[in-house]
Length: 135
Image (cartoon, rainbow, N blue to C red):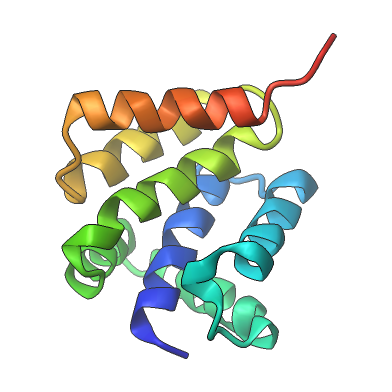
């Protein structure tokens, strides 16, 4: 598994797990993202569970959140940092409104990846628009 794949998956898992409840819809969304986005074209989908487990293990360490955020930042080429943030936003938006914990995690990811506020607002608005439902 390529490190950039792992970093993108870690961003999604962190966003989903922020409220200590990885909703089924969020897990399905991660699977759909991995199946369909071009950045994952050369990724073996069978490795998704291993990557998610590795992220969870990393997060359980004493400095797990900071270390995981650093791994994402240090592993991804700069041009994929906004991609990581967008994927995390999609996961949070996939089951409706994000919890306070999920929104705080998105903020931490945004800051660690050095994504400016205007770009982040556009990414967040796009995620909300893509996942909006009637009713």
